[in-house]
Image (cartoon, rainbow, N blue to C red; front, side):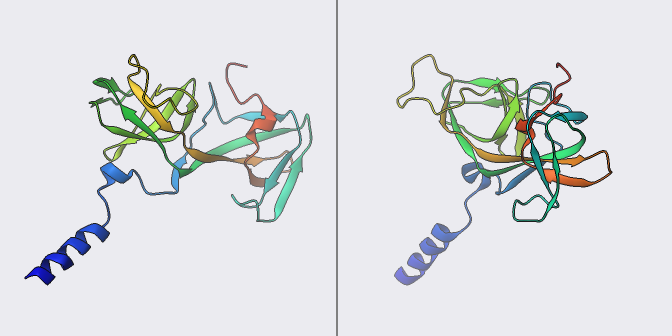
Length: 186
């Protein structure tokens, strides 16, 4: 009987953890995300040179280059999260723009990526939400008493954008920081 208890304990210890404790599976793909303030996929102008690859991989062949001042059409994009950020709820709150969720002290929010205008995309109990979570860096531990959400760590993600040049060539770049006119507010 003792041996069976050990086997059962080992099985529990090595079983996959419930998603609520481990967060979403990685890498996490947020297709269509445009993670800057007022961001839209439209005509963008290179403010610095941009490299465009054949695939969403810097090891793939270079499809073409975009010179400073040249225009491209941003078709779509994807933010790929490789490491989740972690935030801990310290006070009862309702979070979420549009869809909302009630959280209580001790709940863990898995931060997927920055969404623009100080908003983060976060995962909680199997669903994603957007809200202004907190700072762009981890908070002190112990946190200040007025803090409602403690940022433990920030996510690591990459934004890939599918672009087309005036010759009709299409490819992917992770250099959206080198373009302007990304925002409808510009």
